[in-house]
Image (cartoon, rainbow, N blue to C red; front, side, top):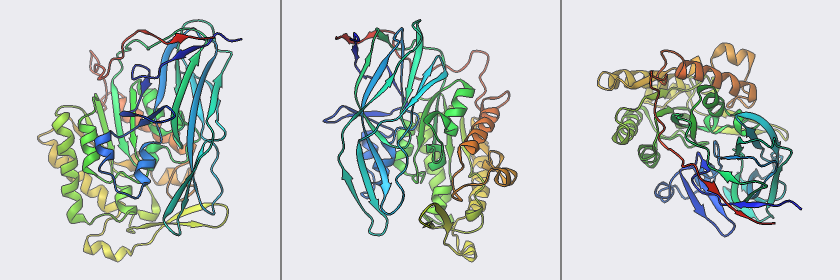
Length: 407
C-alpha cells in the first residue's frame, strides 16, 4: 500500500490563478478576481471562460515517485455538435515533459446555440495519476487543462512536498482573446503564451479570455491590481467579431484600459499587440457567426465592408488605431511598446498553416506564434529583455514543507 501524504492546495503551490473559490467539492481556481466576477454580464459565458484554468498549474518540489490529483471537471459541449475530447493535463519535471493524463466523468455544461440556453449535467470526480517519477529531488508541475473547468479536490504524493524556492523569474501577465486562451492547442503547455513563457523563462499568468478581450474596465482593474513584472495585451479580434463598438468608442476605450493598468503599473514594460492575420475580418466587420456542417465548425464575418465608412471596425482599422494610440502615448511612456500581430502570424503563415476554422490557429500555429513572440519580446533589445540584474519576481513563494502523512 502506498504511504500517501495529503498535500494542502494553497497559494504556495498554485501558480497562474488570480483567485481561488472554495466550493462544496474543493478549490476552484479563477483567472479573474471576485470583484471582477461580480460585474460580469449575466449570460454566464465569461464566468465559464475565466474559470477554465489556462496557464494555471500546481508547482512543488519533492522526491515523490507517484503523485495523484482528485478533480471534478466541467466540460462544455454545444448541442448538436460533436463532443470535444477530454481535457489534457500535463506533468512536467524540472521543466521537461514527463506525462499526460485525462479525467473521465465530470460535469457536462451543454449550450444550445439556437435558444441561448445552457444546462449543467452533474457527473463524478476523477483522479489524475502520475507514477514512475525519478526518486531524486525535482521540481514538479501539473498543468491543468485549458479547455475545461477544474475543481481541485485533493493532492497526494508518496514523499514530502515543499513549495519551489524562488528562482528569480519575472512574472509575465498576458491578456488576450481565445487564441491567447489556447483555442485549438492540443495541450495546456502548447498554447502560445505557455510556449513563449517557457522560452522566455518567466512565470506566466494567462488572462486570455475566450471571446472576452473586450476592453472591459473590470479586466483592466484586475490587471492593475495583480503583481507583475511584464504585461502584454492582445487587443482587437473580439472587439470586431462581437461587433461591440464603433471607432468613436474604440480609441477612448483603449486609452482608458491603458490608463487603469498604469495606475498600478506605472513603469512596468507593457506591450500592446494588434490582431494576428484573420482574413475573414481583415476588411469585413462583425459580428462573427459559426457554420456547422455536421462535422466541423467554421467561422465567418457577417458585416458589410461598406460600413467601415460609418465607423464599424475591422482588423485593418484596429491595427492602424492601435499603432497611432501607442505612438502617441509612448512620448510620455517610454515603457509602452507596440507589436503588429501580423509579425507573429501573417499572410505567409496563413498560406503555410491556414486557420482550420478560419479564426484559430492549430497546434503548429500556436508554436510558431509562441516562438516568434518570445524572440521579439524576450530577445536582445526586446521590450521584455532582462537588464543586467534581471527583473525581480513579483511573487515570491516561500520554501516550506507541506502536507500530512496518511496511509
